[in-house]
Image (cartoon, rainbow, N blue to C red; front, top):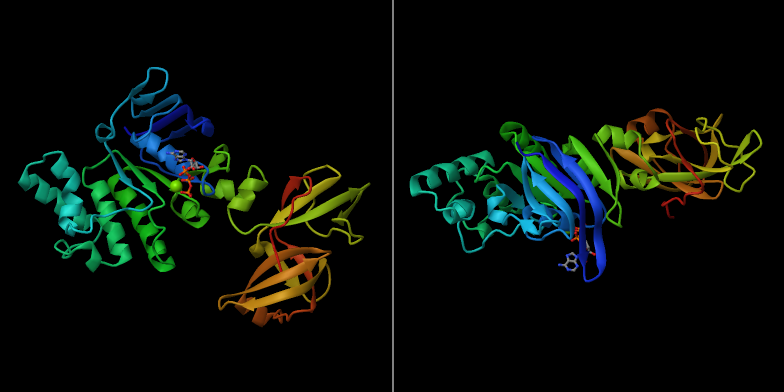
Length: 362
Ligand SMILES: Nc1ncnc2c1ncn2[C@@H]1O[C@H](COP(=O)(O)OP(=O)(O)OP(=O)(O)O)[C@@H](O)[C@H]1O
Ligand SMILES: [Mg+2]
């Protein structure tokens, strides 16, 4: 069993609290992602689980074993925690061959040469590096080096794999390929994965469940990717899971207006009842027309991006972003140019209390 239980964990550096009473449980065999902005404490949490740091409060268990506890001031050393790690900079040793890099943890554990060779070659095959064992890292692509780091983390057959932004240094195509491979590996090996990133696309793609952490290190929401995407707990989570448009709405008696303007709100009914509320929606939720019903908008910027057309639209003084499939724009005469007026309808809206400022800029 490799479920991970983090109970009330705190970490303080020189009087500055980075994690405050954090609790989280990761199930056995699950791919769990911690998603949060830079500096929120993701790596600190990984280091605590791995055993490179000790908590100032709370406890951490892996399976039925308490590996660190502030109360008893006990901590199991990293090498006894049976976990594999790929850290942010994934350092592979430049002077060692692929084989020696991957075999390193087994060498440390003094595994006998025959078993070492067999297990290393198994890990090599697992990440698709067959035939490249004798090469030096400098003779590999970024993606291949990444696989070396992954194989090295997997070679001791860990019960838990900690992956801290392991795909950061890869280009977009490789990143996409590797995230499928990590997911496939997890299914094949049944290993528990804790994956840390600030990239919402990766988090949505690979997680069984994910947690969204804010800049203070507090967890805002935990759930399955679709659940969190479709029912964000608050505007922070909404903003963090993709491009977010926010349109302020004012209630005056039974009537609803856009922000401070006299333009009436046209769109889905709010499920919030305050005098000031905000409609949140994604660029892909925006439907455009040349006339008829809808919110009146002016096209501020139009960018043709191949598969889609991106528009920046001014709605009663608020800028929002829209993304429409190019084929739809062509088929329905929706290729607008800057300065043209349009009508905006919204397929779905998430309602929030109060005025929230939109992130879109001209
Ligand atoms: N050893 C340390 N001593 C003092 N402060 C530290 C130490 N390690 C981390 N911190 C601080 O803790 C906070 C969280 O750092 P952490 O590295 O966990 O962020 P992160 O969420 O991993 O960010 P990123 O996405 O940029 O990697 C930061 O403000 C950092 O400066
Ligand atoms: Mg980090």
